[in-house]
Image (cartoon, rainbow, N blue to C red; front, side, top):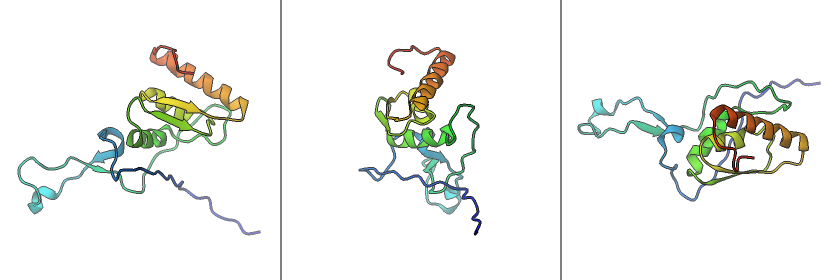
Length: 144
């Protein structure tokens, strides 16, 4: 048998009607190393401080203690959510899994609709979100 190496990357695809991110610098844009001043491209202090993220992101893995084999890092959901959904907007997650997307939606003031066939994962997500809500001291209304 032929052994194949494990891929160290995942592909994330997104679509938008507009050719730009939402105007929230914290997630979709990153601090810029600014060399423009030395080349005379900008005058005075009118130099952009942020730039859009490039097409390759480095995101550390995180541990998840729940009973789910494919939980992904919350930072991945956070970046995509901030770039593509306004505060108060609705996030649709057709595969709840460990509930990472729902949790990040709650933390960033987005509404969340989750779909899952596996009842065990639904219960896992409910418990995870309720635990985080208690930690944050947020109201429980409309969270689960």
